Image (cartoon, rainbow, N blue to C red; front, side, top):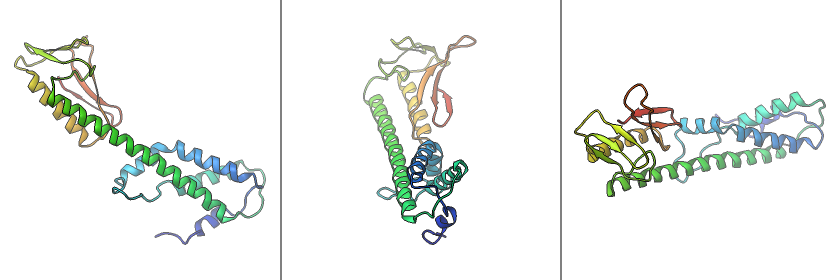
Length: 213
């Protein structure tokens, strides 16, 4: 249940340093919010984001202000007059704006990744199979061996492998990944020193990987 407006802040912010404290506290709060980006986005993902066209409730603003105030008091050697709550409300609004800016930037990056994935899948369906490693040249499958002008050369475990089967395998792997993670994946080839080289799909964002071939 929400606390009465200003009641919690009154208990936290009873005394302050002379007037120059305001800018120092403001800058400290903004820096702490920016440095808490990962923590903020984790909370945002946990609550499932926001519905289209609606602004989510503040997630870290109160925590950031409390943490910065505690740190501010520890570093303060002097205490001054009582604080005007309007000053805290002004700083709080700046933090709300900063929080929303971070979330908006994150949502835009997700939309961009989704668009890239859609374009990649559309190109694979409409054109020859593009090499997922270099994303420049076409893959060819000859006698079960997957090759590309970029130097990719992977003998598959199935001599019946065709470009159509490889395309279906890649699309299935991408779709499986996108079902639980909105970020783009990367493809690479193992060095093959101990065994045959393999085509790997990895995602740094969700820390997963899969062997495609």
